[in-house]
Image (cartoon, rainbow, N blue to C red; front, side, top):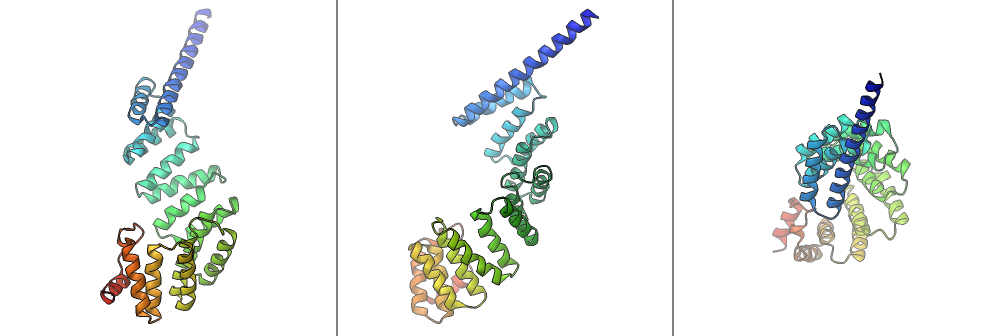
Length: 280
């Protein structure tokens, strides 16, 4: 009996040493990654996994490296293995959800986000992230609920407020969207992207066929940021609606000069082609 007890104690001691050693390797890998030595960190995580295949930390951290390399399938595989070993780790589940999002697998991202919400509804930023996935699937009603839930947790979250307005526009809740624009520019007068809000406000007025009001808002956008390429293009379209071809072409040429066509947020559309033909 005494011999069996000694063996049991030795086994427990060995397990503790393995756990500590795996943790040491994992910590070393994290430190290297923080210093930008990603390849070296990856090698350390690989070593830890080989030596201690039942330790969850190295899998999740190797998954982080795979995600940085945009090798999303391998990252998801590692996160899943880590979660199998330690299912309660919501940070790893969140990393997997975000990787699904990176890989445009929005349904799976929503599934993981929803699991986190079930376990910890106050998890930072989680409703915003699920809302974004819902938007990509054009599930605007669900996205609206998510943004509203996020704002219950963080009422002054500018991103959620701004995106909620865009969702209301999608749902044709125009009166509410207009009221929200007025509220948000009042509450965030020094927000660095205020010109974008005014531009979007102007676009909403255009959508409901109020070009005069749209012109007022786009002028405010361009007052905040003089060389705003999309703003000049938007104002060119507004002038076109107001039958002011001279100013329409002036703004269109200004937008082109500011490299509008190279802006990642701009896509050539029918209005662009019309102005291009008109303003030769």
